Image: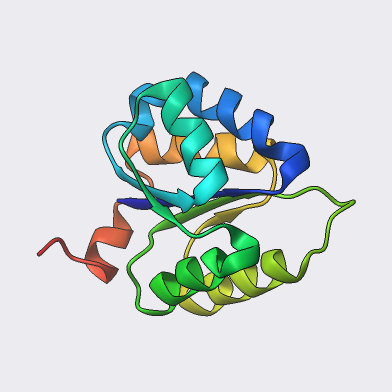
Length: 131
């Protein structure tokens, strides 16, 4: 599965802690992230992460394009309600449109990661077959 990680500045440390906790599960999948979030997670976990631009420099649009082309199977975007939510709205709308599981907080992310571990998201392999 292809997993996208994004986090507002106020939630980056939470994303790092989440990825440390679930490193074993995440290591079995391909991960991409916006630049700062991805760099922080990679440094803390050692996971290989494809980095895109910072969200403010177009990274959100890069992730959005991959969602639109059905190249992303799961999005974890930890949002800070004090920050601008235009990126969250863009990504969540595309996830809704393309039936991509989306979590905007750690509670939902944990449910999705546990589901990923159990194989509950295997239906995405039908939608996005491995080449």
